[in-house]
Image (cartoon, rainbow, N blue to C red):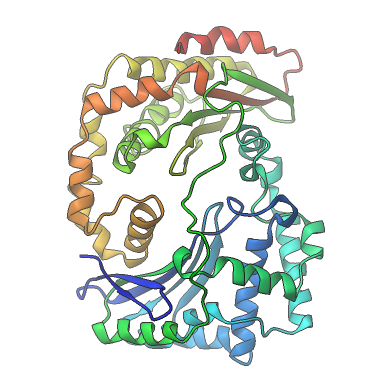
Length: 424
């Protein structure tokens, strides 16, 4: 069961203990990212996340990598649109040594100008090498989240990075490192004394506790829920399509969204795999995603297909949604076992358990205290629940389509004839 201890500076440490595994995972989660950035500082959170590692290494006299390797530990950071995650994992006997390292995330700036410039070059290389800005998913997200911060790249731009400095690091640290907007989550095998050790390390960190709480609410674009099957066609060297559906996430639990997502996109029996790949061979693979905030979200599907079979693939996708809108049959039997029969298996993988409970319970606000509560949330979902969601989400009012194609003669009215069969 999840437990919590609060540090003297207000930072909570949530922990979910399992003495039967042989590893631990300590994560520090911070509600930050482009969801909370001003446009003129786009990418500054990602810059700060990178510089944290330079800062820690400087504090450790250049020995961070060697220390981690000698411990057999893994330490990484990831910036998402709505949060930053710092994660360290290792063997249970090395918990305290690893706690020493991750607690240094909260240090003030100590790195040198040379270290700063080196990391700025690395970030600009990351931006240059990342082909995401040419992908259909990136193009579609720019349109789905048009004129909001969520349309901007997490990494920012090379020009913006050039303008970041030690002052930017300090300002960002002071703005986002606030007890109301950060928490530790610890999973795996460790002792109560280990948790107290992490608490003692955090107690002495200079962390604010007076910033407004960030509550994971996305800005609502002007055309959200008013798309009318908005179709964008771009000439390209390949043929790709992405369907994006606006969602009102206030209406659904995470468990409901999990199950609908899996019916469509995950597992051997999921609808998209069966129809587009397994039975027709139209595609081999696809990308699917649910981008979820506490007020709205977007469920998407993208894939590459031959030019001459593009319209056929759209017809198949539309047919899947239409059939689901007429009623759910035995689909839940194939997606529930992962969450019900296998519920306790989450306990065997500390880093997976960590993300599940930190993100679902404390970012999305589901409030699960243990795997049993999460299991029961999925048990209670009925076919009627899913059918209602399907009819609510998969409408032309919520749909935008981005197409990249080699067919310069393709017109949107050809697509409209197909997708308007979805109805409102």
